[in-house]
Image (tube, one colour):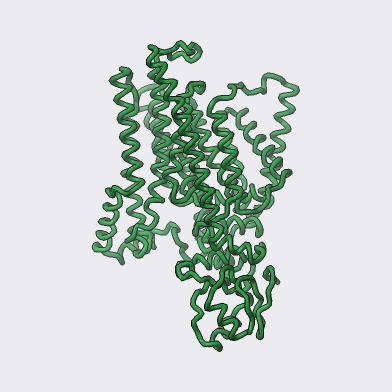
Length: 621
């Protein structure tokens, strides 16, 4: 990892955050807002085929903002100094555990299938090719409709600090951690340990529902909900500033849509919450407030949609075929017409079984959220005798859950092949995202309701004596301490889980590839046979995707079956320029001995008419 690159990255990011704070952006929202602003700038340049220039502009602007702010502070004094809140409990928790996570993530290899089918592949392509995929690149980057937001930011990060699996994961983690840090902006009194550690505990709990993916992968199933949660928090924090609310929504809506097509659902949630906030926080009669609120929401969502609209037009213009998960009403209607009512009914039956299954982790999450918020509402309302909005929040959350179930079912019916839809491929993974979002929104709502239920409402008057009784004081202190302990324990559990995955991943194909050859960084069309003794890796194309990523070639083929005559074996190998053998394959080894009279178990070999020549890398012309 480049120390100079890290320093440039930090200075540029601080420059952006400082400038945004001077413009009135909330302290806790400034980090994620800065990152999204940087990415939007890079996106504009990438779409104009000037990606490398975009990276330089972002770096240059950040450094310029940093220098300008330093000069203003030195010569203009207090006028340009930010109000210092001090260090809170959650600051220490976020920094220390964040650094521990970065340490373990940087040492993590990429294992998950989808890293190689798209997420890591597109980062590698952007970094070493310097442009968005074109029609000629579709044979390598096959998921051509996937928007590039996360890939652009990760590419920017690894361009500065150095390319590696771990660096890519850390780049994405910075987006995740900054989004989670934004949640603390909604707390009115950030000196209260109980509310802070409630949020820390739930942040740790979200890892339980992210267990299928974990943070050591580049898939965006965790990024979407935490970013959406930060967007919702921003709308709440800026509730007295409608213009800033709308600008904030525009930025986060564009980011969510440019991460993945399914980000549209999260944008709908943001838009609904913005509409509600604009209505309730304006003055005057409802018939004046509602039209203004509708206009502000429509404008925010519309402007936020424009970058995605640009991308959608780009995909339709550049690529002639419909990519998987591409938005296409023609493809949707064709699939729906071909499936028929019986197929839809079968998928629906499976879908309901999954929802009401006692083994469903996502269903347990839905129940957890409902029970917790209901108990909290009852306790504050009838024990503390304080009115609160938790019941309304719960109703809104359940409405979101039901809407998401419907949209997810529609996706299985109209945009997923029947073989995948009938087994509800990825159901828990997709549902976990919505559980994570509602967990985060729910705990922030609880923290706000608890703060409003305190006996002393004047923050400046709160002290160790600001309790109704010695019992309530003891309950408060014990609860805060327990939440702190468990939030730390659960984060260490996640860190240990990632470390364990890393250890067992040493025998996985992506790690085995690093032992036989150097990775290729130039896009090429070299024909490579990847020998894999595991039939499932070949049948589900995992071997092919890993090989295409590693050798950066669209001509990598994975094969397991070599039970054939010697002449056919010789003919098969001569169709390729190289043979990669990451793991010993018994049949292949025997056939090489028969045909070439050579004996080896693993390695990368150049194919010649009479023998296989061991090499350490492929030659790209």
